[in-house]
Length: 327
Picture 1 (spheres, rainbow, N blue to C red):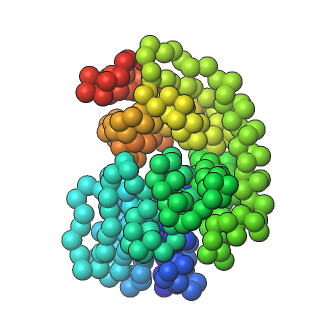
Picture 2 (cartoon, rainbow, N blue to C red):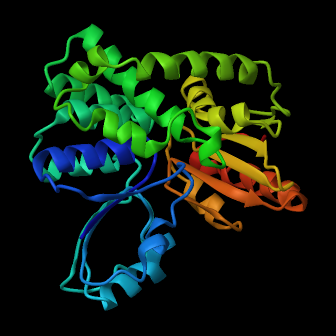
């Protein structure tokens, strides 16, 4: 028995796709979910004597389940770019973990496979808002300017699809998207043979039009905070909206606040693209927070902690060493 456990965003999907193109595993069981559903190993923690590939989810957030799986004689490959903390020592664990703001899991898999599928790695990088790295990988793949734009579209649209509080918020289940690309060794051939990206672009344009109408809560410097209502479109667009705002104003940090149905708040944070640090530290200081240095989030912030969060956001991104003004 083999399990492929992967984040339901572009980076997770394209990291796994590269790995399986190079190392096919017939009849692997797929374990995935919405982008923020990262405690995925918990679903299989009682498994014994199996193999598991784990991609693009924080080891630190899956530590207990990982230790249980290792104790049950499972062989585990772990590839990720999020905060890991102490990595367990086990002959059954192979890990490739690099928590850097300049990489993503698709890029780590690309390196592991000696640049076998740079086009798919470019899609993952674009999805994670790493446009410079995406452009380099597209060039490595020999993509023309028009083809590079297609790779960017694929990455950004698959990433957009991953956001939501529950599967019902998404246009496609992430496992469905993975199965859609699975037959294709080239992202361009996938694009030509499927209407998935076009359907996602239609939803993206509709959701983004609503988001663009939202007002900045207040600006005293380059940092910006937006609050979106409790709605499926808000949950879908929050991450890519924050990426858009980050590219629009690279000197500023951005926080997108979305109201959950249970009266808590979901928050997406982007560190300034000019610095790419601080987002993970900020979010991990609050309940249900995590992520990476450049981009992080909080899944369920109690509403009465919002003022505390904004104060911390201001403090984090107004430090003199980051050269930011307060919100």
